[in-house]
Length: 323
Length: 259
Image (cartoon, rainbow over all chains, first blue to last red; front, top):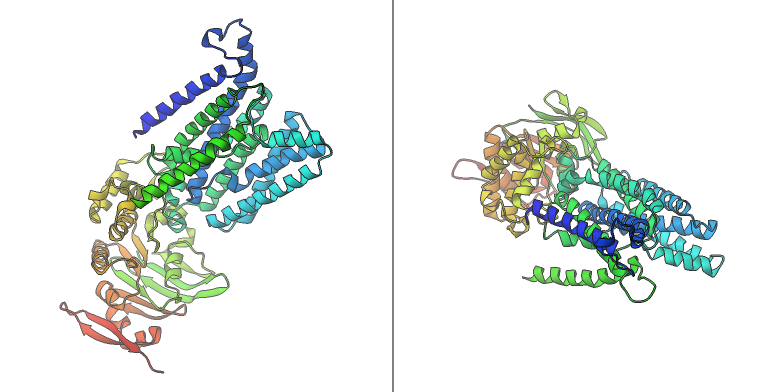
């Protein structure tokens, strides 16, 4: 597909879904009520706008991170979870809830970001010198498992059932009731992380030929690794710090974009960011439309849409390999 | 400019793979590196390509020390063709070849007219223009090897280092590729190839470097280096030397040397 057409199509889709995300919910706010004295406008301005902005930023960040990591690790199954940042950020947030009885967004955010930064430092320490992506993926998996284990431990020693409920509620990522305060905290970090990740495009292209060939082309792979750890840490850390863990976006979106784009990893970055934003905005609008007073958690919905989809994708990939 | 190395010592882990080797390769010639498995052939070309850091010794391009050049400068001068002909994503052939231009391109800049010209020339030189819009995974092994060579040529390097470029190619494609490399040397490029086959080396190389256990057994014109005594010493094999139509001497291994 023509790249300009793809990008403008995706941008239009994101814009439409953003508007849709402002309208959709338990109370439908039609376009006539926008920018008016209609009280329903306040639902948009106070509740849905920060939520849509966060959905846009987080979706773009996760989609982009997924595309970068799949390119870097040359593995179509890679997603932000393999680096261990999501699990570590979640651990930080859970620790602040359980140990400090924190409920203020700023405290939880700071704890999650601190844990994400700590895990990035560990990751760089473990994978440094070894320029191979294999060490990187192993170190990330170890960190991820460790963070998950400590999180489970913290839940088991939680002082009361309310803290447990709060933690579980928080781990199953959602954009419900997020305010401008949280958007202001997270969006700058996500934007910075995305900007850093966009710098890796050429290195990702060169890595298509393997690590030796990439280095013989004059690339500094340690620098690439550092950029990727930093960019992923900022983007995913800040996302998890305000919404909890929302999986599958980073895994699925690059796969959806690959047939529409050309196969160069660098050509996949921008479409994946836009596609991720569209997917999260759409999913977050849909979860509000279920019956009853409550919403399906976004993280749960994502997993429920994502898993069958991914299964379907695997089947299709296998079939095309047989032809 | 010569590509020379002096007292080069390289370790992989704790093992000393190259032990103080020195030689000077000349541009405009095909130099073949031969030796038994584990003798340090790949390690030598990987070190010359700047992928491994030597423990001791120096590598020079003319009078310039390789250690003093930036990775991009080095990449513009020395092209490296790895042994593994892997391309991880389903890139178009033209996009694969375009990767060879990376060391020439300014950050964030698109491709210049010179880039497009070099890519077209590399596709032409390897006779791969007809595949240019095809995905690389749809090509046969021989076609893919030519495309990957085109990728290196697109960088317009002064030196081409190829690590076992003939592995996994059938005889026709082996001969085609070697003829291609000879042509490049004829145009002034320095060509260094790691080979396994004595006959192919004798056919294609102007000079041969024989390695054994990280040391040089012989280095010189092909007929001298691929003679009975050095081959006995390096490989422990006896050869029968036969002459081909053009008068080249081809050593054919016929048995093990008895101690």
